[in-house]
Image (cartoon, rainbow over all chains, first blue to last red; front, top):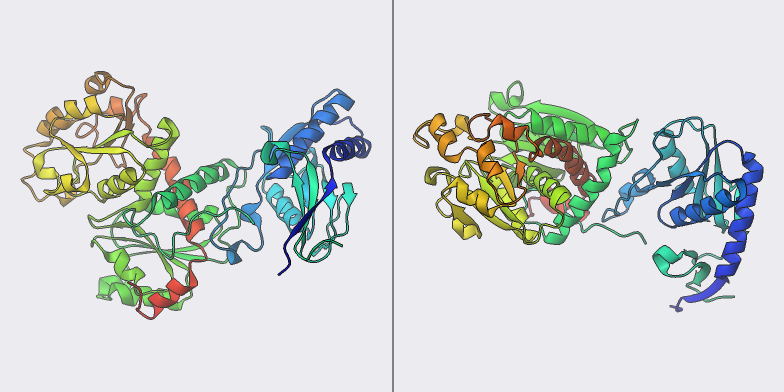
Length: 185
Length: 323
């Protein structure tokens, strides 16, 4: 079996630049007026949401509300995986999500099943005015009709490859790496 | 690959058979599940399509309702049966009842039974997961776990903590689960009560024995006060309830004389004015109602962690091959 290889797709400066552009797109799409709610998907979506929130606060002068979503209990394969995954915490702002402009923030968009789970979970908390999806990396390979509204980078990854987003709070550095079990092109 | 909680296997029969890592996994999962009970929609789809039977062959309102809430919050379908009104009253055996239920394609059985070992007996003979909700004087693992969670919420890690279980230890399955669970988590455990209500070999379980409640309070960070199980006493255990309260009752004066900020637990239902006075039960040291809240979260965690089970163990049980 070939050893897995790792290649940097985006360094820290590139990620910072891409996030700045994503923040700009969020302002354009939402008008920058009404109070936004950025909900990061555990784990790394939460740190990306915090970075986007800081960038939005700089641009609009108003810090958006933030929250975190752990979708473990809404996974459609939960009963087929074992032992049971650790369940994280979902935290949404006091006052709920009803009527808000909400942006789901995740690190990688792949099959779309995580986003489906996130939408199902959010539906249990209320009815936002609108939900947008922001992802740092779209690697294709969708299994559900779900697309990103704000996409940092689109990358081609062949079967068996994995895109890993690194954030300083968890990984000690900021960046995006491609791990390819079959070796890189 | 997501992190995983150590597997509990097919069943939860007691805390004696669990490791420290498994107990920690259950408590951490329960911590995460607490939030679900605060949501506008208090329900997650974890056990959708799972059917659970709550078989309570001995009376219990509190534990049964707690399990029911937990099951419903995980979106399971539930059925309740009790000995009265079921075929058990007509003489059917426990195994026949369970096998009939299993033939209806159930996934889990929560059993409360007056006979020690009944949960194990059932688990060895059916493929569905079995959760012990109290078997005779043996164990009541989810009560033990919710006590651990409540203590951990208030006092942090249990390592080195002094916990004294007071009262009717002899008749108490809660006490046994507590002793096993607390010791595995590194706590120092003591018991306190009249000699007639302490098991003869209790010290062999690795606990300190206090004969005076004042000494216990002097030593303890946490008091877990047990109910005098009046219905199980055929007489002769204590001179009178009034005397018991005078000698062993946890009163306000005794709690206020404690050298530390003592935490008061009671698994309920309480005999107010007997083992615990009302101003202690409702006072600032009491976390009795939080135990009830934590009970739902702990039971959700156990149901979640057991769901799916381990196919090889289920198969062994079906063929009668499980140990």
